[in-house]
Length: 118
Image (cartoon, rainbow, N blue to C red; front, top):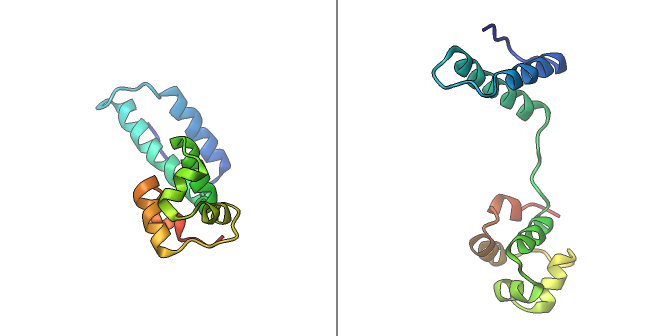
């Protein structure tokens, strides 16, 4: 087991290949330890080199509504009038702090997502 830092794309590909080879290793074995360390190194490299930004607040609302089988009229119960929902979803109206709180508690969308500019 020779583990080295992942500094570039070649190191990253080698680490992924090795991870695939030992993927079914048992915990507590040398390969199991290697698997755990490689996973941590790969995760660190991916977070630094392939960051995933936060979703657009309105797209997050639409996605969550779809997941929950909600319609615009259902969202009106959370944020107010049906016309207000249309304005929000078309990005013509900004979310207020009260709406953000209600969307967070009802749809379970993190406030960090909802408070972003759009």
